[in-house]
Image (tube, one colour):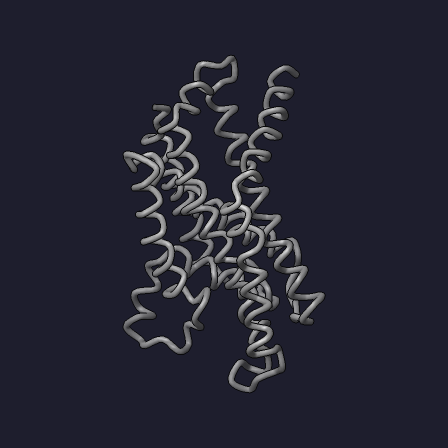
Length: 250
């Protein structure tokens, strides 16, 4: 019970720390909904023959969800962890009666929770305000979001372990993320990209997250995406192992 009490208190502290960061809140909870509103204003969501009878937002919404996952997983977690190590916060946590595993569990849980909240708000806005069509199963979509978040978080913690300071983590995270957002199909539809670009995109983890979420959103079963599931699970397992190996308290 004391361990659970310590974990629950730490979860509350970590959540408050996250919500006190204006940039983290903006990019997690507000950026994707604002993009959705902008795209809705420009393109609307009328059925388009070029999109197999679906609207621009029907196709775009799962990609915007992948954007939230990428931002939180690859940038927010890496920058915040590096900043806490650089400012001595992690050292103080390590010196406290709490076990290191308790801190890491709380940290990961908060990032998972905030990502789920951001994606949930995005889905709610899309379906209520713009009538975005949902043909999938909520359970399988949750699995897709969970697996995609786990994969990107593992890369974020790996970057935090390798980066010497928060400035480097910020630079590398952003330089890695934004080309990834464009090439993965999260922002620009993959269909309009040259074949060579599409070939390169297959090696980007976020591409598989976009494909998985887009398929599950339209009604595909998990079994219809064995490659995406295998890649994301592999990235999560390998990234977690490497992140644990490179994690530094100070």
